[in-house]
Every structure is written in structure tokens, then in C-alpha cells.
Image: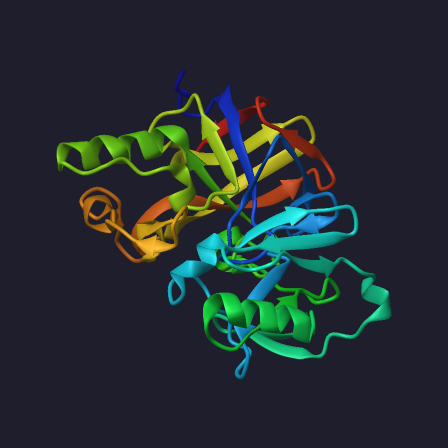
Length: 291
């Protein structure tokens, strides 16, 4: 069902929920999440709460430079974050108490610099062994305020941890289906959703409908798509092997080329109401359209 101009229609179904505890490492698919101030949370762990940084400069590292980061798999335990990777013994990172520590590691993500918690030499040695270059594991300091660009959020104060710039990325299943249809027409294999690393996957909507929503509401929870997501080379990385494959950007550029942002796919999304709410796969949003 499609929404009519100026009206709302209950239509968008939650098809997938994904949390990425460590920026640019593998994600975790969940049945339910808590809506935190800086994005999805589950079992005391937040989205992009950790980040791998260069061991010398403190500048963030991603799959763009190191596709092998896709093979670092997080798992949440009772009092620790566990990381595994091929050829390495598991690493256990205690969650700890922020009040007992001080943020001493200077880090930079894009053009934003801040102090973060250093997870220590054992974690640094583990990451260095996996990635083959000096690296350290930084944890976001929740006392620090990192805001999304207010020009896009229309002055909504949207907090982030180490995400690229917005707390939630929303993509519809039909948008991926449309891309895969176009890839098939070009004689290429389909791509799974994990190539695009969304937090929220919705279905029962049309291709690109996430671009046309003003809001997604469910009870006291309200989300607002605010900015199309410019795509980088990460969708060309096979998340199961950590190697580069076919890059879909050439196909996307034929119909998803934004006049100022470049090739876009998915919508960066902020929370406007309902912090602390639980969102579960299978629930439905009421949508408001922007036309």
C-alpha cells in the first residue's frame, strides 16, 4: 500500500535490526533493540560504541582501507564484548564502569576529534595481529556530545557515537530488490543487504520510499529520515570474505545520483521521540510522506 499525499498510512514493517558495536567491523542481527540517545542499543552495548584507530595517529580505520575488518565478529556477553577473527584466539573486552576510568586516547573520525577510552595493550596487540598494522581499540566516552549536522536534522539534536554522522541508517528491502534486478539485467550477481550496513531494514514499501518519508512512528517512538546516505566503496566488499568484489556504484549511479551528495542509497535517520523504547522485528510504523 502506498501513502496518499498529505496523509498517513500504516505500512512500513520492521524487517531487520542490526547493531555494529565496533565501527566498520561485522554487525549483529537482533530481534529487538532499545532506542538510545545515540542510536540502537542492546544488552548494554551501543551502536558504533567502539572504533579501531591507527596506533600512531588515532585516526579511525575502516573497511575502506582494510577490508579484512569485515571478518572481525563481535558478540555480546554478560559483562564483556567478545571479538573473534580467523586465525586469532577470541578477545574479551570488559564493559567496565565509565566512572572508574578516564578518556585518555585522542581519536579522530572524519573531521571530529575527541578523547576516548583506550581499551589497552592486549586489545591493541590483537587488532594489530588481525590487521597487520598498528591499531588500537577506542571506546566512546558517553559524557562527550557529538551531534549530527543540524542543517540536515532541522535543528534536532541527534547524538552519535562513532557513526559516520547519524545514529541510524534505514534501507528498504524493496530498494535492494530494485538494485538486484538492475544488477541481474547487467549480468551480475545479487548483493545481500549486509553490503550496505543498515541499522533498520523496512519492507512492505516501494523502492526508494525511505527517501519520501517525513516520519516513521509507532506509539511514542518517532524516527525521521533526514539525509540520503552517500555511498563509498564498502558495498563492493564481500562481508563474508573481507575481499573486494563487484562494485555496485556504477549501476546505482544510473538512477541514484544525488545532485550534491553523489551516489546515494538509504536514508540517515534520527530519533525525534521515544528514547528508551523497544523496537522489535515484525512491528509496523505509521508513515508520513513528504509530498
